[in-house]
Length: 590
Image 1 (tube, rainbow, N blue to C red):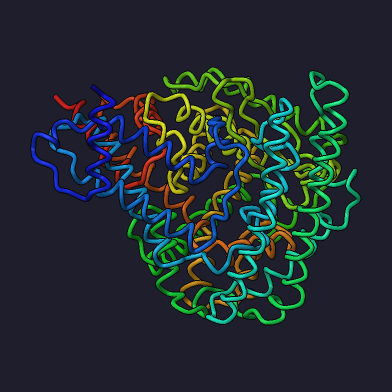
Image 2: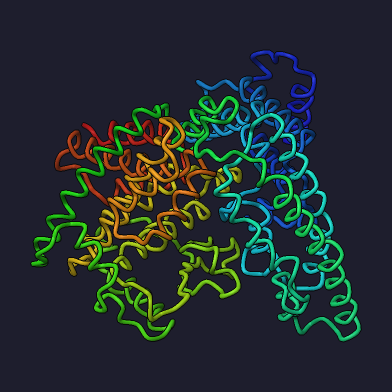
């Protein structure tokens, strides 16, 4: 019966006919969700691999081509049309939530695809950029499985497909130069140094060669020899020439001719594009002017709190002098080895454990580890969280870069662990993967929710028994003001016409960071407009919803229940999250 209903549904989808009331009632909603997840994974096979769906592990589509964009638009539109045939009023609350999430996801994605936002700028210096990301995946440090010969041969297929992606990226950027849709020169000048090792390194020292150093023992000697030869050939004949070709285009053509300005305003239709990215990353209708003004208020508030910490420590200088003290005094550099740094992080979970039970009922089953970022990729990496595998064999991992333990400043370690690990990204992501929700929602991510939750988690540090050292609390404030500064500089560059130098100066004025760090951050925001503002917007929304619940529920408010409500449904657009919290509040009232 279900197969028959599914067949009828997709006949309707293809034909575009308007179904009768009887047909509406017979729609298999779970079938729609499952089929969408399947088709979406087929369209985005790396997303499938990341979520332990291994049917497409040998595929690497050219997801930046016109053909791909049109295919994605058609898929999204088809499912939007199908969802519009569903009798929404007859659904359960859980079903309504899934319909609303999928409609939101498809609608906002189509807006990007139809307007070609990002289409002409497929390469930049930030870690999101696919050439850099593919190298990390090729190293074996990411989610690509390398467990048996099939896995290795699947990745050979992906390596062979990579040059086509590079050719398309060059074509897009060349067209971008002609149409005045480009990334800024200051950011793009960083890319050749990232690419050079990827075409210059000898094959045995190449980042893509690393999986061969861990070949499974189950592969017999003859198969092993043939696999090594084929894998090495793919690196030499496909990977290295592709990276060389991209590098030469950037050095000879793109960088000399791209714009010297900073924000999107100098791009064709840049104002409309920035408004879109704000909506995409914040999942709200907040305007650029509102972002900028919010940032100014938050920076002023946090600076006042920082100054209070300065006074509490007995430091006699002003706040800029306090920043310099924290950046340079030997007391903030207590480590001699990488393992000492990692062990300090590892100690935090046990310290927080009793307090975690007072703040959370819902906690992930997935295990968790702390690791140093591998040396071959630490130069371009930041602290990050990698989600656990669905089968439980790979834990969630908090990676931190420790280039030189003697120079590792400890003052913000507690806040960083809370954000990236527990109860930040590890709780949110692992709970989402373990939730009883449709497959498409397990892989759904919105920056405002995910990063907003992680920043909100930092605000729980005192309740978790952390930040007893005033300098660790100062570290937490430094993390928070970084997110507030982002509001100002992001809108400043992409909406108000700030220069790169103005933005760098604003960072240095308000944070205890080096000029090198300030430059790195500003150049990130230059090529990822809107993304950096999502943290603060999400955090403030969660805080506002908590305060609303406390005011309306009074003694019935339970912080554990509130956190359960925020986390149990996985990542949500903020408007939908607010509706869910409002429903929960209403259900608690007499």
